[in-house]
Length: 209
Figure (tube, rainbow, N blue to C red):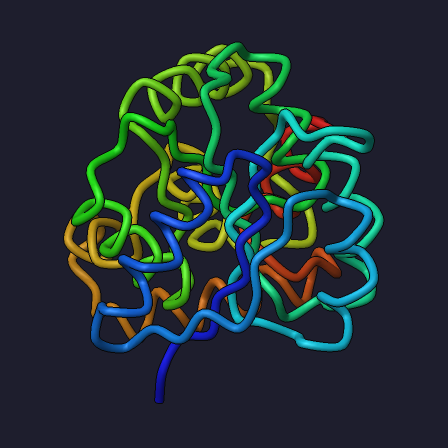
């Protein structure tokens, strides 16, 4: 089954380029493209795409506010930021709004394809320097972070590795357990913390609300 995509991007060249490339890529179906957040707010809850590729700097409402408003209407839809902004404030604001991935526009198209597949399978793909920013912040918080009482020792361990940006397979390799076991633990973590994804779990556990 194809991964359904919506694109929110005001630059015609970028928007049309993404649409053409993804439409020709096996395993993807572009449902719609939008030049403004206002248009996206109306149609995304109806279309319910698997993934929305979202720019930040849009005319009128910005992409982060768009996610904040539409995420509750389509909780199963994942949001991938695709932007030129790489400052800490924009990154954290986007993640807190509900984005699960963050790529810079200098990302190669083949890397974008892999990132979209990773996002769809439960990962949180990010450009390398964005991931480094997050790791730096979470390492600083790690010293202050107390184990979450509701979680077991193993679940706390996995949550900490999630906060460092590791993929499920990387966590499995580091802990010498099966990837399926990692998924089971993460599902229990989400249930216990009453969250739906990695970003919400990290925000709740590390006080990034």
